[in-house]
Image (cartoon, rainbow, N blue to C red; front, side, top):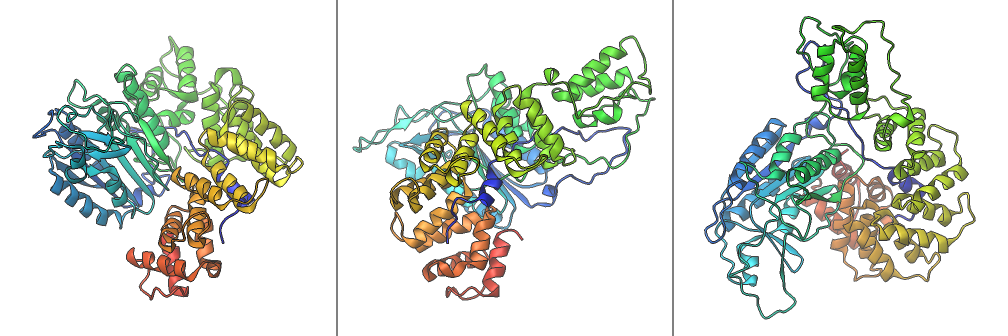
Length: 592
């Protein structure tokens, strides 16, 4: 059975998952600290393949890629990755390294590939260029270069997260000599083409699709320099980390180059480097004016720090509410050598709305909602702060205020209030709010059931790229809600959602393949889709294969058992019978 639009599923998706983490550096001198990490990421097996190519035999030499790769490999190794560094490879060696790395990825939680060198896009397909490529004709690409799809496939075995970073969006150095074949539909374009990775996968371009990246005037490219600087930052969640890389590159290139992240990941946070958890009261050593800390330590030192210590704090903490509070504290201390113990402590939970930007409020509320960034989970406080940001016109916060009212988090459940906030956010162009309005009209929650309006909002959200609405509209077509039943349209929207990273869309795509609805029946493709959904954390897919597998065709069940066997989760017969062995294998694939 496939997943229809359901309350359970929307609860997993309609609240935003980006969170801002206040940072703690490694050198908290004079503080009583524990090395216990805040998350379990540090125990995960992480593997990385780093490739840099500077010395091209038949193309322009690039001074920095080998240096970029070497520097990044060192950083990742210090962050706990099992790193394979390879430079100036030919095509055969590149293929061999990727094939070997695929075996490593199969046993890892996190797999990462970085490539620096020349890259080419032809007719929507991306290629990484080895050092011995000649490329006299466009058709030589298939034989002399490595496709990005091959690299992506090599990472599929990683259970938790798959990351590809490409500093390869440079101009095509072969364009002058490359002859196009008689196929007039082919074209070789500037930069790389956009991609749509599935599941917990990210593909990061040094420069967005269709544009070129700079090699840099220094010893490293702007993209590599930003990565090396930002990756080791403690407590910086991956989504925010890549946004900071983007900002640094745009600043370094005077906005000529804009890095871009393709794909989406689950709400489970990932850090390249963990924060340090503070287990005891912080003690300031007044004999050492060199003490420094980072943003999240401010509440412990706010009333006791000397002027020199506040200055040291500000040298490490550069943004957010704690930065602004420290600046204000420093102003108070002007002319004074030591902070007095009688200074009133600042109540960080209720900052004045006018003194904190809406985006800061939103990210801090997210930390209270999720219990991240060193904040204790507190739904009431999260709602209060969301409200402050929403009242400033922050659309995402409006959506979350609606979500919390709809589900009774931090406040009694109130569908009508939720509806009002969703409408306000949708009017500001917020796609998730549009999706949630569609949900309410689909089910008649706080409004009269109206499939036409539901479809209207789903389509508006889809126009903005909202994957969940793609899944929901697919369900409308599959079940004939507000439209004539149309399996072809249903499959089309499910597939779009899956390609955009929505795990329920991926599961439903698997169902359509298995049932032969809207597409040619293909048990293998169906099993591959459902397996990816399970591996990527879709609980519904796992539960279906454990408790409701009998409604799926036996041919599909056999194919799923084959996949489980190939990945080492299952050693029984692929006969379509799901006994304890198959159930255990499904649980293993889900990471249990």
